[in-house]
Image (cartoon, rainbow, N blue to C red; front, top):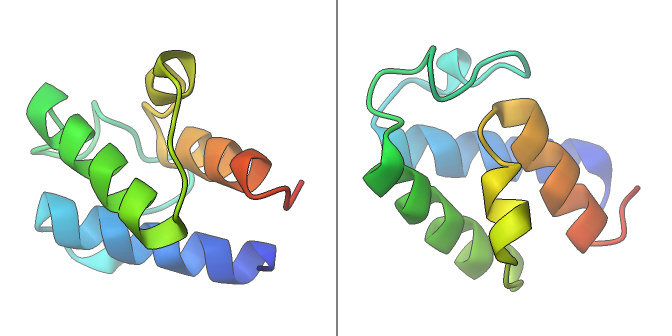
Length: 82
């Protein structure tokens, strides 16, 4: 899976889970800048990403996913895309 596909899938998952427009999911967006990205929705994001990409995340990886860029880094590393 290439980086563009990973990014697109992550944007879709985040937008659907957080109930925001996909245009709000920019690389510099994070849990502080997107309304509704709270601790409960963070877990919902993690579960949705695990289902979408067929992976499981470790606690330290989940912690590193507090921004869109962080999510992309963790998912790409997990999939061996970086």
